Image (cartoon, rainbow, N blue to C red; front, side):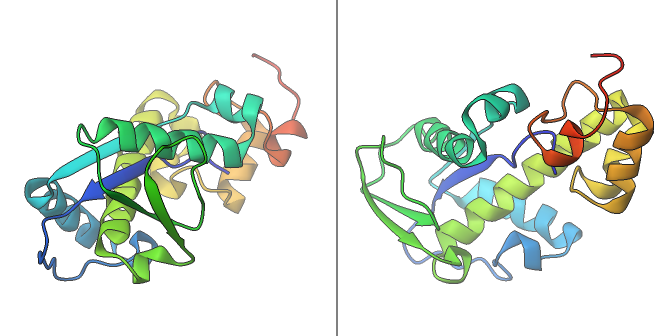
Length: 177
């Protein structure tokens, strides 16, 4: 469970660029993600990020919110790519040629780079949330549905950034919202 769906990112890389250690963000240590983030930002042709707030996710559902964030990331690139390589989904409201891959991070450096950008942005957002809501220890679990996070929701109730549609939040009384 995350207060916000992880941001989506879009990255266009120069032809022939090789970034050592680039792979799926979930398989990359945090310190390596930070290094890769800065290498991607400094060498990419363009980087775009899209973020959808929790209340929109609650309203339109997680899949539609993911697609919306992806469209926002493409729009944020500032350039019009000739082809979108996308991990797992297809964007129906984007008028660009697309190819979708399951486990796209293992197929495309651009998808892997976007995965790194999105994860680092998300983790930084969660650190900011930790400063605002320290009782939830967002710096420890980064908003994922860990036992600790669920226990915090049970103890303190959801805070303003939690998705109300997430099943673990729906089961908790909302004492102060």
